[in-house]
Length: 367
Image 1 (cartoon, rainbow, N blue to C red):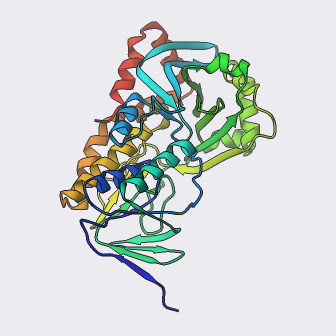
Image 2 (image 1 turned 90 degrees about the vertical axis):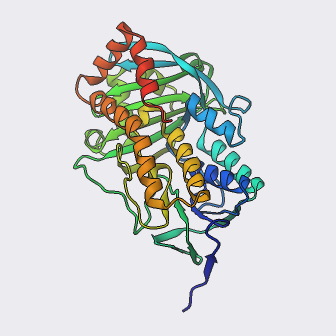
Image 3 (image 1 turned 90 degrees about the horizontal axis):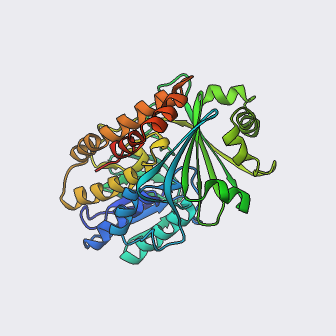
């Protein structure tokens, strides 16, 4: 049976963007504003709520303003403080500038709308394979000279990222409904709770709910019997500050998971004509709160590269150099934080010398 093939033939005016998350949408907006006619392809007609990216730094806010989305004027929860917890220890610091708690559903919906308003086209198809100039979808095949891969943490056959660890990192997220008691604990804060083998980030979002997102080693999940809820309950029992937040989490709340997250990985090369964006370009450990900023920066830079007729390999190598410092800093902090006493050491250092927290935050920003 012959498959339908859509040829997105004009390399400059009609780039093909695989993934309508923040990286892909920002690239589409920038291309459309420059007069191009990008095509966004996403697998979901209804915008989902991705696990990662629920906190946006001040740097992300600046970038989004350039794309036409003002976080400060949106329903996002304003965040002004960082709180660190390890066992019985805690430390607090003012953020260099205001950050924001916003669900990925709200962010992705807004950016998708702005991309279409700017002139991008949107098609729904699940892409199964990507190679030079070609993307194979469930509905049809797509061809274009310039293809941007912005599929987030979901790999596509033919362009999978390496799996290098015997104890891979996992992502886990539970959303806890808002309440007065929970708000008293977390309002205005981005919290990091350190455990041996992982950490949890907690932030209030636009609905008033608490987004609790963990990055952890598979071995820690095994200690919880391989069951996410059992693991959360175990951590709540042994870490009092985390337990105080989890006390508001009912037993039947859904838990989202994602496996094999290659934290610290950076794409340093790419096939001809394939521009890697977002988590397909660089995966910064989430404790830095900079994943969205790197995604947005890659979308902006890739769009500029296509408009300037910069080849994909040159773009990828240049973006890898841009991402090297923030990813390297965040990876080093992550490795310390997940060690037996590392979280305690980081928290104590931030308590005794408060400027160190700000220095680490600024060092892990891109651009």
